[in-house]
Image (cartoon, rainbow, N blue to C red; front, side):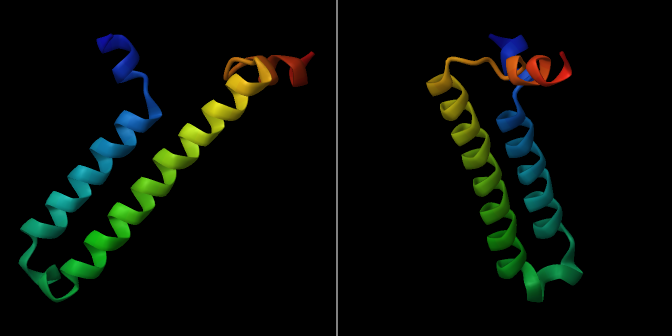
Length: 75
């Protein structure tokens, strides 16, 4: 399970979003823009994770794995 988690685009997107949020909160010069930046980070991270999920749903619906379409194009 840990191997799947560490290879997950969704996991790393969430981690990077969390790190960016902490950086925005820690840097005092960003305080006037803090609310806007945090909203933007949450929005982008949420959209990316949603997009990855939608991609997985479409591939599962087609009966493909995430790499099968790549191999079909390459051949």
